[in-house]
Amino acid sequence: MVKVLLLLVFIFFTATNLFSEEIYYTDDSTRIMRGMVSPTQSAEAMEAYNTGNYFLHHNNFEEAEIYFLRAIALDNNFVDAMDHLGLVYRNLGRYDHAEHWYLRSIEINPNNIVPYLNLAVAYRFQGRLEDARQKYLQARNLDPDDPEPYFGIGMVYQSAGHYEVSLEFISIAMQIYLERESMLLFNAFFAQGNNYYSMENYEDALRLYKAALVGHPDNAFIQNRIIEIEGILYE
Image (tube, rainbow, N blue to C red; front, side, top):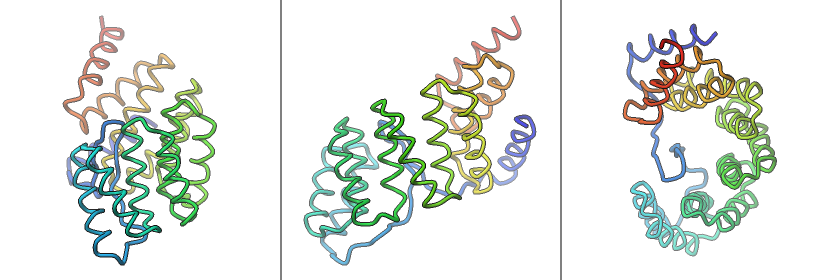
């Protein structure tokens, strides 16, 4: 299964070299750009939100905080600003503040998947694995076709040392990423490689790390892990 999927991916990648979504890397995680859920009618709030996003994209979290708070003060129901403010606080390690704004966003719009996913990540970073799993399950119920809940649940089980269960959920996410032509597929390769490595299945781990390296060619951790495994297998 691993060999077939990787072959399909490399054929697709070399044929198109084109992926669908915009991705940013913040200090704590990968950020996926999604469309706004509830655009504000306030021009001033929108301007503050856009300025906050500029600073967020440049990992200037202290400045981003100022503008997202300003956007929310101008529009108390601006859930997009709340979700991004939560991301700011998560990167600053202020998890209680992040939780507050994610829960506020959910209260205003319980059908928006974004704060569920972001809150689950915050819980996972704090080691609150069951809380994270429950939020990912709620996100999956909102949109069963979104790959992020499956990937997140897989990461929760990986953190708990349940690697075989993690494999199953991340495999689902990988399939959806492939169908969506998403660069996040390479993140899933890396996560799946970690599962196989932890299970001492070094052959499949090596294949997946090499696939992950296609999307992250400068990642020193992946490069060193490949060297380590090749030493185990071939020396």
